[in-house]
Image (cartoon, rainbow, N blue to C red; front, side, top):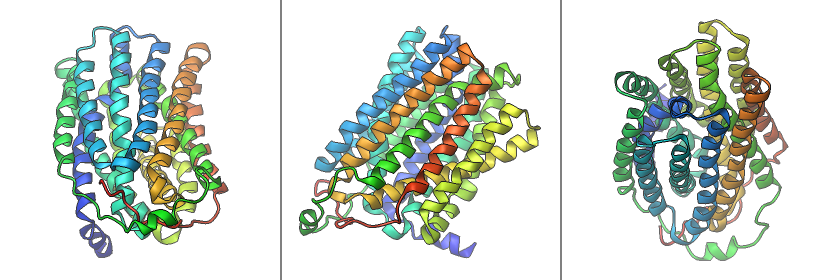
Length: 400
């Protein structure tokens, strides 16, 4: 325990600020995310429109990540973090006033554009300021900060929706995102590497085997997310008879698993091997979906949700570390952007696929297939070669 606390005390200042703004932002986002399908239904959305709502966000997210990735290599990620959060905040204010399901889909697309810019820029920023020997730990800290916001967010969102209307949580998202924007302006500028490193790291393929494997894995986990976010809340309310508050409780348990186990699993991955931890991480994630569809008792569902939250953190913290080490810093922004953008196409496929299976076959099957796809995402990483560090990995753009 003492060693764990010491690891937290040595967290660099840029990561500490980024963790703080992530917490503020996630507090708001988690208020509305479990309720988003229900909000769409309240506006008269069909199952297909619910899929389009998620897909519009994902497509805009992918376009934004693709473009922002290239711009990050030229201008640095710091300014795009702030711009992305500001766009996301404004979009959620519009969502709160959406008059129809069609308008909701459009506003979610705007939110996706801002979220995409922030996502790829924030992870790229981490790759420049974190110690390479602690990359999984650094990414898991950001994830834990996000989940700390997620602990209170779903319950607050459910209470806001019950006390006012389903629009209230989206207004709260706009407000908390605005606070995160202010925190983003305080991010310090990382150090500047010698330009000699630029010349040394220009060579090599843009996308080689490790990056391709990571891209496929990210595509699959995004597909799982698209299917899961489309089917989970409707399944819990329609099949299990849960209230909106109970829907949020499971999100809270995911977050608690992330906070209590995630950083230490990330630290363990840095010491013992990120690849093996990422491969194993999909098992508890898939188990949660199986338990939900199989109708496990509440205590078992709560336990699997807790473990699934830790598993997701283990997967993503290791995945980002592996991608950072696979790509020279001089082209890391564009590779991050391309990999994330292509991976987000999986969210579209997952959302539309789940909506089609829900409408034509069975809602429970859609949820179960989403869980199995998450397992496939982690198993794909077994195809990675041994971890390596390319030349120029310490480089940061001069305009950061």
